[in-house]
Length: 118
Image (cartoon, rainbow, N blue to C red; front, side):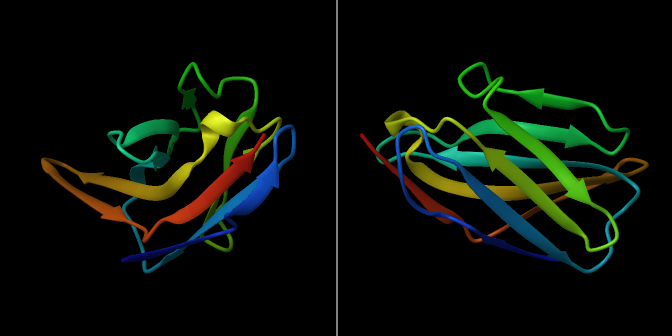
């Protein structure tokens, strides 16, 4: 399984971006897809996650501004980011965590840089 993230770039505060993560290969039906980010000098943090059942979870800092979604037919995971703030500047990574019984595997994309100017 390989993940390819794209869609990052430079945007002004208040603007929007949509990140995409294309998943190559098949994953278990029980899974969690997620977006993380890592700002310079900071630890990687969870931004948004979606369980295969459909439930979503967001960090408090992005709740109401970001939306995670997935297009099953094309195996793509999206992160729609609205009303961006300078503090959203970071490298964004997509992640897939799959489960089968007692087995779990985690896959990461290469990261895409989002820069929000004030």
